[in-house]
Amino acid sequence: MELARLREENVGDLVCLPGGLELAGKSFLGDLSHVAEWHRERLQEGMSGRIAYADGVARGFVEIMPAETAPFPIVAPGACVLLCFHWAGTEPEDPAHLAEERHMLEAVIADARREFTGIAALGWNHPTHYPLALLTALGFREVVRQEPIALVWLPFRDGVPEPQLAQPRFSPRDLSGDGLLAIDAAWSARCPYSVSFAGRLRAAVAGQPERGRISFIERRIDTRADAFEHAASPWDWGWAYVNGRPINPFALPGDTLAAEISRHVPPATA
Image (cartoon, rainbow, N blue to C red; front, side, top):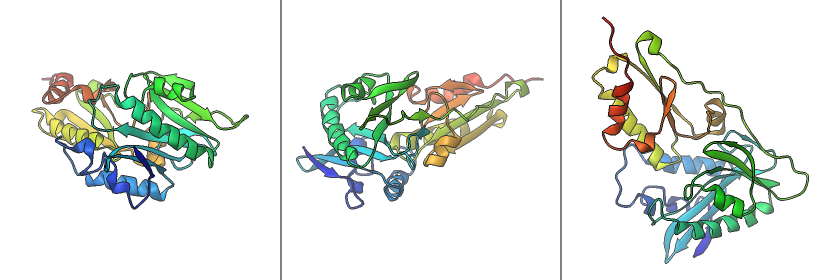
């Protein structure tokens, strides 16, 4: 594995950008050029990290940003925030990628020690998706948990204040009393899966027989200001609510998303 520093010259090699290994052989909805634009914009705001190459092919990456500009609702002056890390080319639930991700994270932690007071991250109570077990094995300690996500912290010196997770500001709507269905959703151009889900959700809403009784509002969470304005609990950059109740967008493949929306439309009144 070769670990190159993430720069403007090689950002196009990231596996989650058009042409990258993570997208190979898969179908996505939406304009994935937004993903490349998001990454270039974040580089201008101080994003750094590493890209991992194996046999000349980009296989993985780790991204961090100064907490003052990172698009997460985390308050940690002087520290950085772990944005994303991924090793492509294995099945989503295959733990084989964890060793490679640990190697990449160790390199980025060593880089960050020279510039920041610590690293804050959001880990998931999940065995392979941003797993807390991997982060705690690297020395991160849990600060606060909002299941299934926890804010974790790796300080680089004694006496550094722990990071704080901003209080949720977003409140989903419930229009059932008016005989309507409110759908509140968010997505981010940082991730091709989020871009694609946003496209799926728009299509599922547009195709509803009772579209006239659905109030659909979507939000884009790309910047730090967006992250604070639309902070929900547990925090994530992609979420969906139907009349105030959360649904898991990624657990509703194919036509099941449209069926779930239909199920929540209140019955028409005479």
